[in-house]
Length: 215
Image (cartoon, rainbow, N blue to C red; front, side):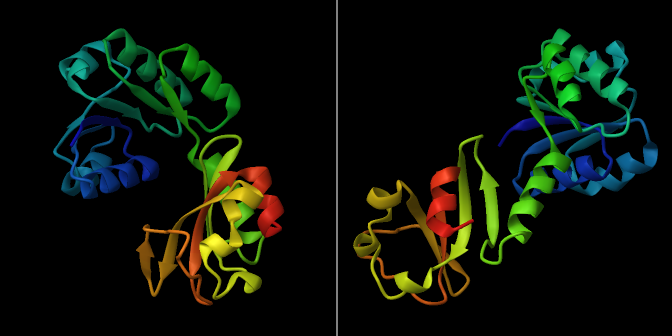
């Protein structure tokens, strides 16, 4: 369990609060709009109404005590930038800030952000890849070169074992899980038989995945 300071409770921030709550983390939520704070109360440990660009207010939250500070401000980049900078000046351990464009990410990283997230950009890429192919069920980009796909078992692999296909040697790809009857099986061995209705979680370099599965 981690202690997290979440600043900005718009749609993105509220969804973060909900998921952090499901993961049983302790969350202090902050926004300058009372209605947003009220809406987030069921999902957070504590919440305050306040201006995160005010150094005295931020310092009163004890930012050094949080494992992570997340700046989820979406519609006011100036406030996001000032908040990010102040958090780092006040000794925050890890500052993660939201960006909508590459230029925003550069400014945030130069001014205190340890990491930057692009919710719109990341979702746009996921949507493009997911729905431009008939056989991709899910997709996670791990870095610029590696990705993980959920994909149905190809027709010529059905009722063959993982060892017989030898996907690791032939394509440098790992099958890290099998979804069968709605359940995820992670204990994949060379003797695992692939069935017609299974889907596979495959991990590897994006170029190798493209080549193997014609993505």
